[in-house]
Image 1 (cartoon, helix red, strand yellow):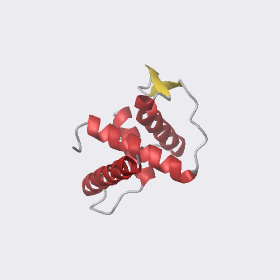
Image 2 (image 1 turned 90 degrees about the horizontal axis):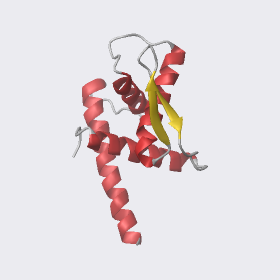
Image 3 (image 1 turned 135 degrees about the horizontal axis):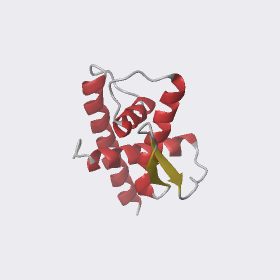
Length: 123
């Protein structure tokens, strides 16, 4: 079982590095993007209003949209509806278990890798 876990961790690490490299080339002139920046980009992608400026509270909402969308395949959230301004809303299906910071980071990286595999950005 240990070997499976290590192999799985290595695959996640390689795929994560692939996502970071791809997005960093596309959006940051090759400077490696941090996890939060990638979550923000997912929020922008999901909202679809890429060519506009966002206020600080809207940026927080973009991050929330991204987290909901990223964790949807894991059964934590479900898409509910779009509001009149085109913002997606999600409902909570299951509370996230209490996670340490490192565990949260791994969960989000897994979710982001899954998202970009689904979108065929990485293979």
